[in-house]
Length: 458
Image (tube, rainbow, N blue to C red; front, side, top):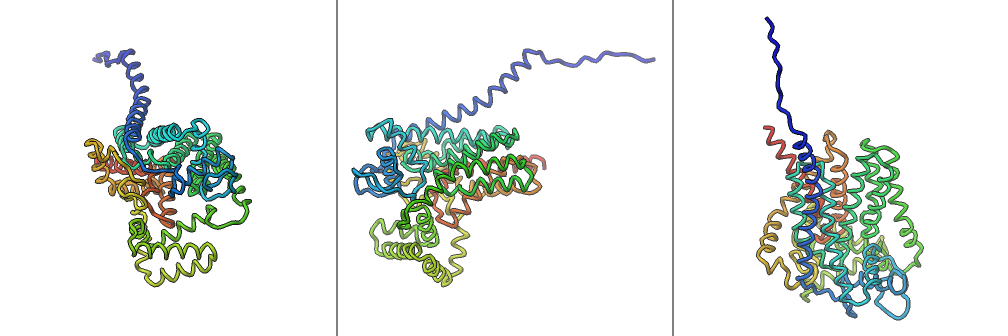
């Protein structure tokens, strides 16, 4: 005898379902807003309280900040891109620095003519850009890892002392980091939608970053070639990415090529040669610090480096011969030196500066005067070497041929490895890694989340 029964399954009320959907819909923008507010609040507190000695507007002052200020002043006064000190006559154009950051400074000069107002506007805008970089990096990695790991990455980026302190300097790193993160985020949108339009916009983002720091000029074409070779994007999308990047930066490169021939030190190629020579000396950073203290050994080594730079700029063959002779006299030392430079790039203490996280002398830094900030600095310093190891692991995981990942992690990994390689060839200075600290943290967190998932399956 068959007995027919009616099964009753529990049902979820419609109102509860819609409430759950609404909560999930708001969780993501709420996370981004909270991270942005937290990151901006820390940076605002820092730039308001820290007193940085960077007298860019003082005659005869010397430093990178001074050159950026002079570029901006000449742009705002004469529409001329030159690092020449201010004068009553329009200066001659040069190409020693890249134009992105001076343009930002000059734009604020057009709004605020007085130093105090202008300086405050620049620092607050940099605090805003730095906090938005955190949001862009979290949005970039949205689908890479569970929400708890993503929130952890955002929290670390928000409090990382180098990124916070960099907002207070008249240096290009904050703007550069924002534009590099913007390019990666726009690329993520392009790849998700399969959109050539967004690929072109991403290429423009990368080119704006390259116009702020020329190290990224080759990156977009190389990334497009990788995506095409790995069949992670269509030909049209890759072409749009590469062509848009080249089209934007091409006129600037053409302009530099048409400048009158002058001293090598007035061109970007001359600056690259300076970094190449300085970066080839294992003793450069200690010698720089010693020379600043007027110690004889530091002065002698710095003079030898300057002579090698001058020789390379005046006669490339003779300069390369000097470098070759120096390296072949102690090959083991130089092999080890170049192998250690990636770790040096991502190290904690800034060498060409005041040490620790400081480029210029800084008083009343919250990381020195306030207990919570001091605890944050101590925690981050302890984590720093582990982040480097995890970031390299994350980059390798993202680029493994059999890795079942979207192209997003691979693009981020390529950028991390690319900048590490270039700076290791030139000059590996921890200051230069600051624009990419968010990238390092995201890839490190990605590796930790993958390791956690693997352990959970055991």
